[in-house]
Length: 484
Image (tube, rainbow, N blue to C red; front, side):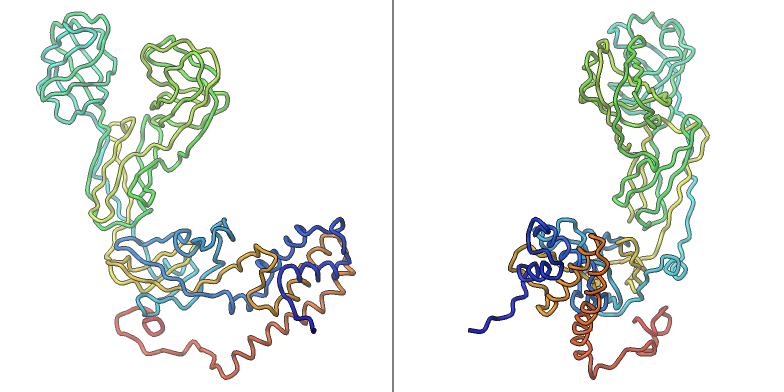
């Protein structure tokens, strides 16, 4: 009986052992061979061979008023998690690209894309930092430490807002101090002050405005809103995350260790960190594993008066610190944006400086049917921004699926000898056996020619496309002579 040709992983290993003169697993393990074979198959196949055999059409579905599509959720979806858990399934995409069956202009150059589709930013300066103030007409201390403040109107306040008092007669303990308010009514609110004196007359309260809202021209582009102002004399930059959330452009999640906690000024606590923390006023921190001042554990606080290695938080009746503890600083969300209506709302943990403009840069657009697509950093960006759902068809070039079993074969069985030769050259190169590499190189080149011969035979009689094909234009539509 005549033996048949096998081209599976087991046969490739056997061939590699022969080519590298490594018959024993003590000289060369199966795992080492498999690593070289996988590397050759996934990364070293000739590009023109990959483009023929690892190409497929992938559909990306566009949503109204969304111009960016991260390919991790579309092109890079893992089809077989047992084969590839990295999500890096596709190498790239190339022309042609179609939007609902019509060819679109395809870009890989960001500069050219935005030269053809320029973005003109709009600046909104309608919001400015400031304060709401009111006159005090009465103070009831009968429920101390709960103190009820009466004023002409509390319009603009909310429970939890922090107000500061000045020029109060009698209840002078309030002067120059700030308090979070509660039990808000149309003309009253409450604060907490131990052992207050009886009110006589006068005084004012003020609330530095932390909440703002405006409406931008709409619809607006996602991930393109930038907001700048000053808080405590320091610049604060915000941006949108593409999901309708506004957050600090310079703040990321941070984990640090606590070195000390000073409670002598309670309810204001001074936290000292072991290393410079890089946090700014208004950042939210959560504590864990603190000994002594256990009231902090699993609770979150907004920090103030931050320095290189200290910051302040507020905690009533704290216990003395004894040691340990960590803190996690989470990016503060400052508001939200509705990209379709342009409704923008902002809430600052610490109020912007008085009379300081809140500058809002954004891009508005007119939605329509897309006919231009940019592929940039594993993301599709389309223009015009879609006005409804559309299907985009792209030609995607896959990485070959790695072998997972001894009986697996390459996508074309005739490649098995090329794989064995390429893997052997990788192994010999790592051994610095340049003579062995030189001996195998011409044999590998011959196998590559045989692989390419199949492609050449398939293309016999096929007419090559030129740049002049489909040159009839559609008046008034850019790039229509080639892409519409």
